[in-house]
Length: 301
Image 1 (tube, rainbow, N blue to C red):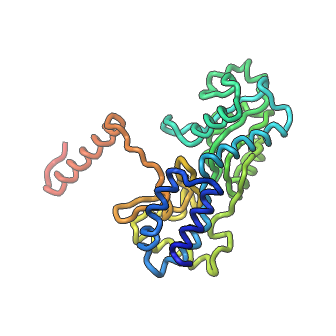
Image 2 (cartoon, rainbow, N blue to C red):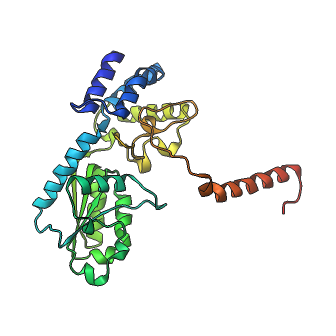
Image 3 (cartoon, helix red, strand yellow):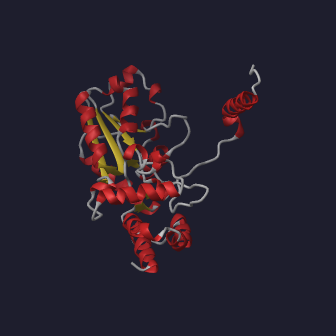
């Protein structure tokens, strides 16, 4: 496909009949240069990938979050008296996409703030007796591992209750993993989502999937993209980006920047303030001093 037509096709698809948001405007500025810099032998493979990437603008996400809440209410026995709304916490205790979407969901659907919990540790055993439904909210689920790890924290509390997991997009693999997890742990988990996808190289997009996979590996290596990012986190093989960020499940070529490559939908990599890196920097300095002295044959103390 001619470059300008390819760009037009992709932008129209990603805008979903809306005006370009700030993220897509940046993509429009860079798209032609980005694709032109791809070596010719890889362009057919990359064209198929980029044409199949899903992008979710904020206005569309908000519509979906309202639609998903309506679906939730159809499940019956959902009320302010027996339901709480929560998010999946980050390992480092900082904000993440799940928190962002929880806030949006709460605002769009005018939820009672007293049933939207930032910390379930504050719910007493007596209060848990009245809770029948726990609703988790996130943007995307690639493998289900992050979600099930979150469930583990309060697993005993969830027995006999309904756990709803609301996402914009999910994958077949994550649904299978969650299904297996709930059976193994005797839990009632109900995923609610807008779209479900297979892994990229299981969608029959290419004449030869294995050849296309190897081409992606070769191109990723040329761009110095780390091996564990070639196919996304835990081999998710996802092609998805949102207005606020790109999941690490998305293949590296789409979202991973290196010294000699600028991706089209880069994942946010906010710089840590100095006080968060002091311990790491100290260890790195000690390691560097040790290696320098070792090379000189000096005793290290």
